[in-house]
Amino acid sequence: MCSSRIRKEIDEALFAFISRQRPGLLVIHDDLAPMVSALESLVAGGKRLRPSFCYWGWRGAGGGNDPTIMAAAASLELLQASALIHDDVMDASDTRRGQPSVHRRFQAMHEGAAWPGSAESFGAGAAILLGDLSLAWSSMMYETSGLPEETLRRGRATYDLMRTEVMCGQYLDLLEQARGAGVPGHVPAAAGAAGARTPAHGAVDRALRVVEFKSAKYSVERPVHLGAAMAGADGETIGALSRYGLPLGIAFQLRDDVLGVFGDPAETGKPAGDDLREGKRTVLVALALERATPAQADVVRVRLGDPALDVAGVEELRSIIVDTGGLDACEAMIAKYAADAHIALDSAPVTDEAKVALAELAVAATARRG
Image (cartoon, rainbow, N blue to C red; front, side, top):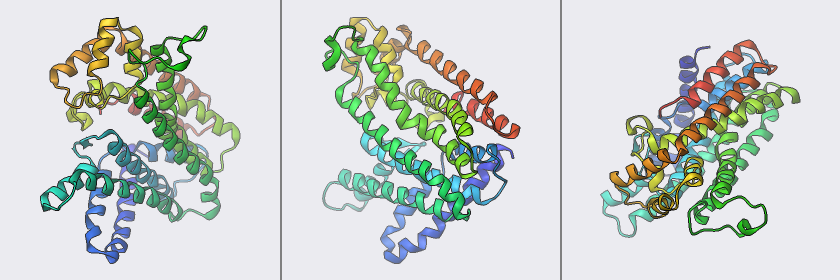
């Protein structure tokens, strides 16, 4: 089945589910209509990678071309919506997928109506609730997908684990930003121990830990596991898919890190250098700090995380990341992790059709521009 057809079927299942939920909300009150509209607007974007990995995990483990698998796989888009909405609130992001982030959308609604009180607080609160609703609906969509109960049962443990891991990864991300990992002036408690790595080098390891749990497992490994588990895959197949999915998921997020600094806003849907304004302690930034001179590191310390960072400031930080070799090092890591995934896929005990599709998805996840 071609990727465009899969996306079409995922979209149909996703929007049909949301449409079925709309009357239930409007019975409560008409004032809930903006909640559904905001969710529909958000999920209209995206590449549907997680549902696609889930579908091909299913087919790779011998699952048939059953249309109900599309509904179960598409439920991952509601889980992703929940994660994105909450992530944007925590990062104070203004945009997502080329439009105002959900909390800014509700903030604008408050401002437009000239209601009393804080428009910003209202926007954040409404977004948190919509993220919670999306999380609840992801479970509901999975459970009502139409797949047999035994099939759903086989996937539940993986689905539950995925939700736990992404929330724990998000917390670890918040923790790293709060600690100011790798920024001069901050010395971790263990930095003075014999044989300890430098703070910047340790920051690469910690950033990779965040990548693994916030993104890599959640974006690739667990979705492909979910599909395979529902199809009844054995331990050998699940293990082989981990050897494919985890390195590919890391490469996927590292590419996202690069795009967050160097991407074209027309492709990424976010302003140029937005990750720098938000102060994200990514692997890319950690690699640059590991190689930076004291003077370069001082610039990063002052500029990174400045919400008022202008075009010149973005360019200065970009230049440091390039000049230190941080960008080249990150690109080399992407290539290595992607190669590891392809090698693992070659020997994985999955169908040939799935191998071709999963190889194509690997390219789409790591060579993308937005």
